[in-house]
Image (cartoon, rainbow, N blue to C red; front, side):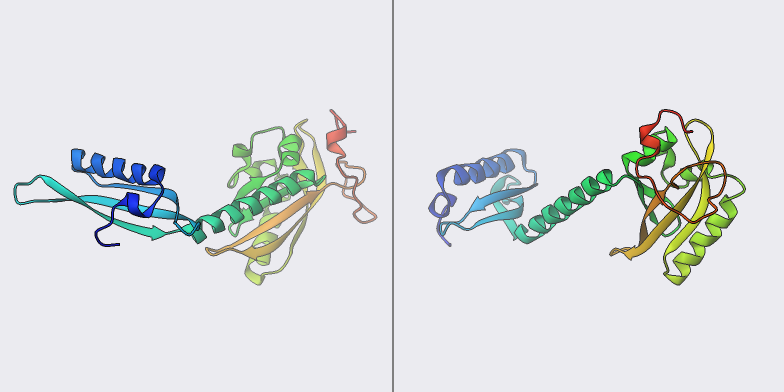
Length: 222
């Protein structure tokens, strides 16, 4: 590579882009950093994370450019796969006829699907963190919180019966369940909230069976 220019190693468009960066650095005396896709002569296409900086002569004037490039192709592809996977998860959660949510180990909500928003009649930001607690019946909240702590400490499935305030102002019994999972940082949980076949202010007596989309089918609960 010694003695060769960018035009000797890359196609004219790519080389011209490199040359423009070099001119900018020499004119401003400032370093620049950027990511750029390039194609090598053998046809391989890679993403480079490049930092270029000027070096100065004895007279204090920029007389050349030093650059360091790092191949970050695999990192970029991993990020794209992760984004695609998250998009699929979000799409599936919206298709499920139940309230779906995720929370951190301390019980702070960090995701809710549209069914949650529709039931409570508020924005996701109002439910985020500990905001959801104000929609739980005051008599149920202590037991719900204790059940959550026990599930987190034991690493077991979380399951709790509780009354949640509908946007009409009425409370209805629900069954909330969540399973633990860990990411690279800490434990978090993915869960659902289901309504009994006939949502009412009374606790179900004969076990839990579900009618998907019950609340979505009615503007007013019966």
